[in-house]
Picture 1 (cartoon, one colour):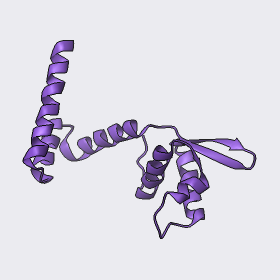
Picture 2: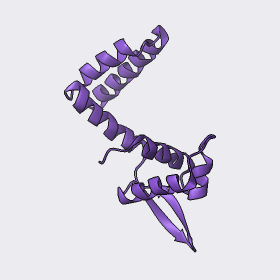
Picture 3: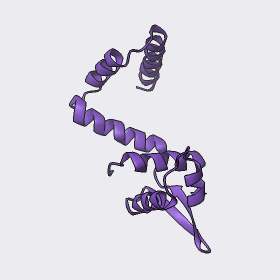
Picture 4: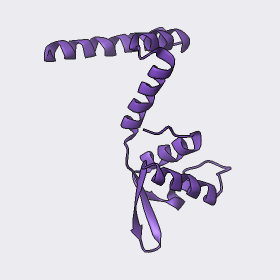
Length: 126
């Protein structure tokens, strides 16, 4: 999967939220000062070429929709980050995340509970 720029990620974030939308709908998601309509149009066209966005033509207008889910993009991005920064080691990533993100005790306990639940689930399936 090709990496996205910050501007491209922002457009995808809005399109994931909308589900489907016309260019004017995407532009309307931006807070002021919003980028120029033509700027957003250019980013959308790049995302179409990268095959992140598809569209249906309605008269002279195009209705855009994501071709990749937010969850799939997040998974691919995390795998790329883990490869680049943590030598493909989930353990190194978890260590960095828990030490550097200044999590509260409550948040750490929530993570612990999520990990325990996943262990139980895998043990029951295995």
